[in-house]
Image 1 (tube, rainbow, N blue to C red):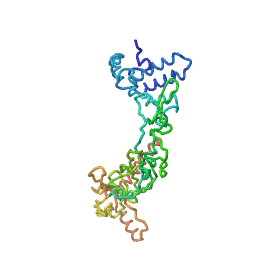
Image 2: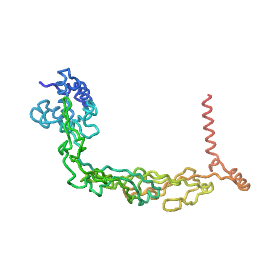
Image 3: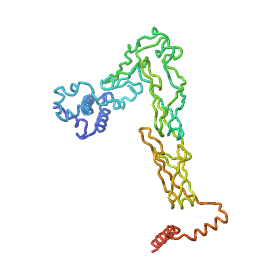
Image 4: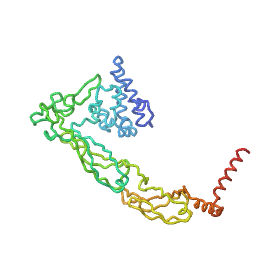
Length: 387
């Protein structure tokens, strides 16, 4: 009777994917035949652990195994049983731990190519995406604008049209990989495929490279584009320009250009989402008696009525004077915080009048009620400290 796969890996049936992979990595490192050349039982234990991980590391196979045990695969279920390849179980990083950079690695090949469940390197690749940061004023971000940007990127060579050779006659099939772009290598117990070191996965060799692009099929070029910035963008928002990134390999599309917005701090307004905040300085007489003041907006000045007795720090909301949302027909508000200014450099007459006015204040009209309450509270706190 076959051993229970959970017992083989030494995990509980409730173990998650990470625990299962960790357990298999430990066993693979311990029993791999290349690491145990003098132990005849190591290869059998390694195969046993690999078979267990092939099933438990794949969600569909694990579900079938949990329902029916080994019978699920003896009846031909689950990708044709244990001999049907490694399915969706991820072996790439595990074998990378065992072999280091011997296979695959940065070259784009690796164990996934050999086992049939991995991703092989594409011979031709789409161009890389580019990121360009653009600085805007608050007004430009709020209202939208058009900006001209300039940057360097690779473009398809005009001389060879991306082929990398002067003519088609200069392009031949790679003699190393015979046009496959991959070469088979063997190390001990495993045989793997790697990207061909001579053609770098293209499957072709160029006898006479294009003199302008030196066989790459691409050239660096300075580009200037006009970008339309939509109204309402904020810090970190990106505008995508499809196909304006790096050129792709022959026959493949270019990457995209992403323009990321950076909004400069404003001297008057602070932005919070679609709302704008502004501090409005007001003299003590207007704040006391109430009246009408002018406040700035992105569209000019508007009138704001404030009631008598307005305290410093009081905030008033003016609807629809903020920033429009870039993702819908929503307009933010303008929040105006009143800042009552204390008068300075008073004349003798103004000081006398202010003294006379101060003498008329009492607890009922706010002359000293808060001050008295503050000191009474402070007195009680100090008393409690020394009682």
